[in-house]
Image (cartoon, rainbow, N blue to C red; front, side, top):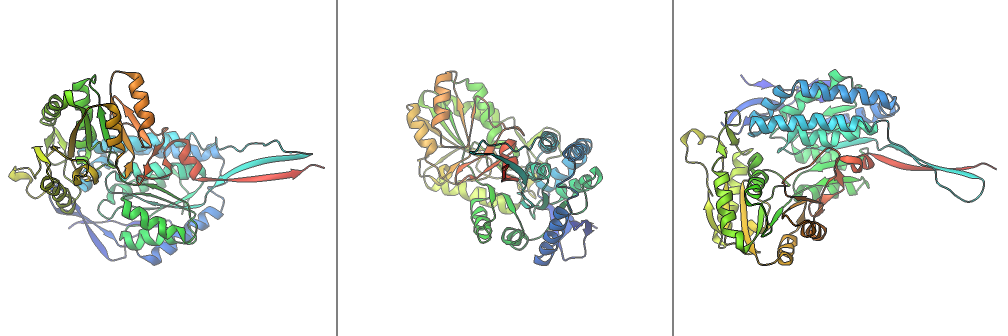
Amino acid sequence: MTDVQSMLLAGNWVKDRPLAPVHDPATGQVIAQVPQGNRDDVDAAVAASRAAFESKEWRTMDPAQRARILQKLAALTNAKAAELALLESRNNGKTLKEAMGDVRFAAWTLEYFAGWCDKVEGRTIPVPGDRLDYTLQQPLGVTAHIVPWNFPVQLAVRSIAPALAAGCTVIAKPASLTPLSLLAWAKLAEEAGLPKGVLQILTGPGAEVGGRLSAHPDVDGVSLTGSVPTGVEVMRAAAANITPVTLELGGKGAHIVCSDADLKKAAKGICFGIFMNAGQMCWAGSRVLVHESLHAPLVEAVKAEAAGWKIGPGQEDGVRIGSMVSQGQRKSVLGLVQKGVEQGAKVVLGGTAPADARLAAGAFVEPTILTDLGATNACWQEEIFGPVLSVMPFANVDDAVKLANGSQFGLLNGVWTKDLSTAHKVARDLQSGMVSINEYPVTFPQTPFTGWKKSGIGAEQGRDAMSFYTRTKNVNVNLG
């Protein structure tokens, strides 16, 4: 008998709804059942969130006390990291080591934003006459968080932590495929002392639950990490109420590997940036632009590095590439690889499911490298969201920058060179919200995670996130 989960609605754990199965994608087995929330549940959650916000218990709490609660939640997250990671590995398919890193990063994020609680400050502004003019930074209000399936806990906490630090109330909607770790984490939030209604977790269909949250007139802000089509729908729904949004969407990251790059270091970084999490990352470095003098050596170096990336169930020792999140995702990835091959790409590694019979029931894809692509090839232009790397040579750096920028996306790009002048110039000219030089990928709770073009609007992490979850009020006082 599979475990029946509950969702957190208005301070109560609720399960008396129709249930949907949750799978382990490495085996195809059902590991849990979760309730299917509906529009009425969303309305009830928003009402509870509004009541919790208006009660002033959280938003006007001594900021230092809010910080202590978030610090306690961070400590509990660390203390339960092994349990949360195992749950996430089973539900998502990623390796246990990756899942553990995700949970630790979530705890670090909570620690960082706990430090912001008592540092949200206004300012005084010099104005003419006998007046005092100042600003207040006040919490945004009721916030909705639509969470993706690729990093279920880490990316949920990435937006929840600053919202809570600012004094907002939170309604989070986990992805239907991967709700388990966030539901477990929410119990830790209760233990940490969050007041009733400040945090709610609603499970259910994305179109119904997520759609209603985005369009709800009493939601004050929406944060989504997801695909471009989903982002468009969320933005359209929010626009009806002029609700502000933060959207972190797709990516098609490009590495620019210059002729003086450290080949071994670059190969390791490139593999890490595309094969980690089975390539299911918005910031994956899925394209490589390498100087023509290094094209063949780099391809061989990446192949050699990839050979050490064992494929298998995420809980097995030594596994570095776990299952994809679902059979549907695997089908999509392999379909795009086939499309790329039909358009002229050459498969020099992988390109299919593993031959190992033990893995036949899972959603596994071999690490894949493609060469001989043109700039219009589907695998060069489309976000594959799998362990697929496309490699193209360039003659000079200016051409490489143009090719890297020739994408609808602009999230994270990488540069590999020993010449700091070149590194800084290329970083300046790349059309992306983030650039990483001589390592890939990397981010920290205090650094903005932000995309240009169709990669998103706004920023997660750092002071930029706090800006989204607060709003400015100007106060003018006539002292005469």
